[in-house]
Amino acid sequence: MKNYHISINIDAKPNDVWSTLTHELAENPVAFGITKLEGKIVLGARIKLWSEIAPDRAFALKVITFDEPRKMVWRGGMPLGLFSGTRTFTLSPRNGGTSFTMDEVFSGPLSGPISRSMPDLNPSFSKFAKALKSKAEAR
Image (cartoon, rainbow, N blue to C red; front, side, top):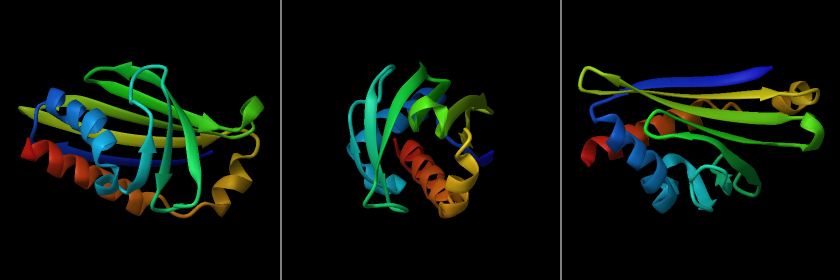
């Protein structure tokens, strides 16, 4: 099982960070390292995104948790649970601002071979978190 993690403190209230995460991301995905995003970011929605890391590939995801303004989870993968990617966004109040974390876990019987063929997501995670911080703090 492979996973990625980033955490950053943002000088903005959780509601502002949440709004940036859900609305600004949908309106201006390029700033977050996402070349294109289709669909609304709401509970139960199916969204598609194209990442700078794999611009020719669409990732079909479902918003499976939408606990405003605390937690959101997206999941995508292959049928029968052969491979699954789960991205969790967590916002926690911290000293008048927000502690933001983003985790992605890959699981399933094919996660080993597929994960080994994937590029390193750490630079992408860093770009996403920095964009969220910059945009939320500018609100």
